[in-house]
Image (cartoon, rainbow, N blue to C red; front, side, top):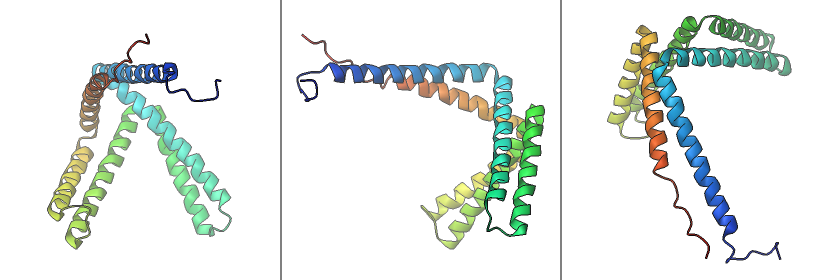
Length: 190
């Protein structure tokens, strides 16, 4: 009777455990390999990031065009605004695909500006008292975010290089530690 659950039949549980172990090992080894490659060839990693960023911007532009034509209730101004945003996204994406240095600078500028806005938001929340935690820590988080954003804006290439190196090291560490979390193998069936 294959359709009835048999608690003494452990073969499917063993198979599931073996699949889980194999998946964890694969992900951990992939993390170590990708981290090592990123650490050794930081420039190539940054070029890959810039290509992905350019593709993302072009896809976002196509999405904006679709939104502009799909939204029939939008005003003429909204339609034109969506088309302008799409054009800017498309041109920026095209520049990113043609020049990785410009792409990385644009990416760093986006990150820097986002951190500054996030920091200002945290400072405002701390000042008003509407925070997700202690006001002092939220204010400190805001100041750190603003300073990080300013650093990225003034040193975009160095910031991204450091970011990739730190990310690569963390990826290697996470991959190695994942190997220590493997579930134990099941005891053999006697």
